[in-house]
Every structure is written in structure tokens, then in C-alpha cells.
Figure 1 (cartoon, one colour):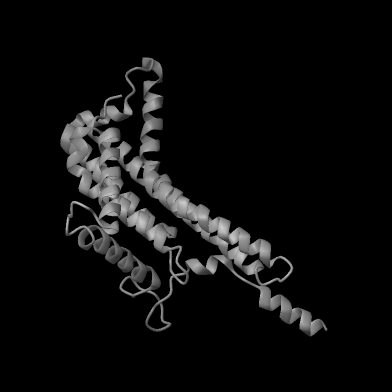
Figure 2: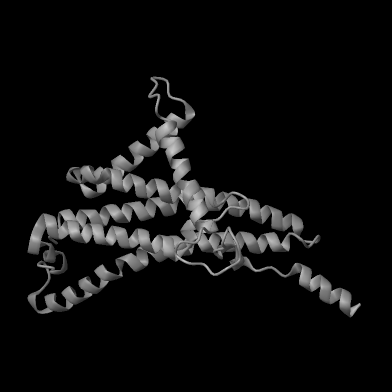
Length: 251
């Protein structure tokens, strides 16, 4: 009986975080920077899905759009309006970059909800690179566009003179923390939701509570679809805010 109970406990053991582990697709050796893994595979699938929808799907440009063209046009209009409203009309020239960011993140988030898939945006290595690219882009752009006047971003002229140096230090620290918060917010939210789904899926093996677990999984999937869009929106709108700071740094 003790052996049977031990075997039952082992069969119910599950590890919610194993789904985020990078695995080599060819062999079991160590993973190097050039190793093809499940992460790189699903990044490639994400790019392919974007091309199929936004390029191939809207290629006809019909007066009566197909479903693919309608989705592409909705995405285009949504991001274009966001850039214009948040960063200003002079930021429209950078719309292709913002559109690329939004498309990659939202597609990666949605594809990660498919069975047996991998959520690339749950990895800080992926979101960190995206955040660092945004940080480098807006910082370089700020100095190119404004020169030394870009430093006005850290100098709050409306504050009393005595506290301006302290506020400048705080602003400088918060500026360099941007890529950290930018990347962790996206990766953390995607990882948390998928881990919770995995936990409920593990309990679904217990007959007594399997109906509740299945209902919970269904509800979590619906929530995660919403989170997938919200997190892509948040990452993109923060990028627009940072772009606005680069173009108009004065407080």
C-alpha cells in the first residue's frame, strides 16, 4: 500500500516552470548562442505568422477586405493612432519600428497559448533585448535630435532650485531602470499566467476536482488571451512615451 501511495504521488508530481526551459531541438548537448532551440523555433514561427498576416494577407488590398486584411488594417490603424496620440505627429516617421514591436509581442503572446507551443516573451532574454533596443534607440535619438538639450529631461525646472539636483539624480536612476521594468513586466506577466494554467492542469488528473480544474483552465485561457493583448499594448505605449521624451525632453 505504501508503494502504491508513493507511486500515486509521483504520478501527480508536476513542475509548472519546466515549460519555460530552453531545449535544443537537435541533440541533448549544451546550449550555445548558435544552438537551435524551442525558443528560436517559436520566434521564427512568430515572424512567419506576422509576414503571412500583414504582408501576404493584405497583399490584395481589396475594397471589400478579407478577414486577414481586416485584422491587418485594424492593427495598423490601432498602432498608428497610438503613436500619433502619445508621441505626437513628428513621431509618425518611427511608426514602422513601433508596429514591428507590437506585432512581434502580440503574436508571440498569442502563439504561446497554443498546446505544445513555447511562449518566447516569457523569457527575460527575449524581452530584455527588446527593452534594451528601445532604450538605446530613444537615447540615441534624443541626443541626435536635441544634443545637450536632451539632458533637460532630467532637470525639472518647475521644481524649487534647492531640490532640483536631488530630483535630477532620481530622474537619472529611473531613466536607466526603464529597460529593467520594461522587460520584467512583460516576461513576468506571461510567465505567471502560463504557470497558473500548468498548476490547474496538474490538478485535473485528480478525479474529485477535475471539473473545477477544467473550468479554471478555461477561465485562465480566456484571461491570458486578454493579457496577451494588454501586455503588448503596455509595452508599445511605454515605448511611445519614451519616444515622446526623446523628441520633446523638456519638463
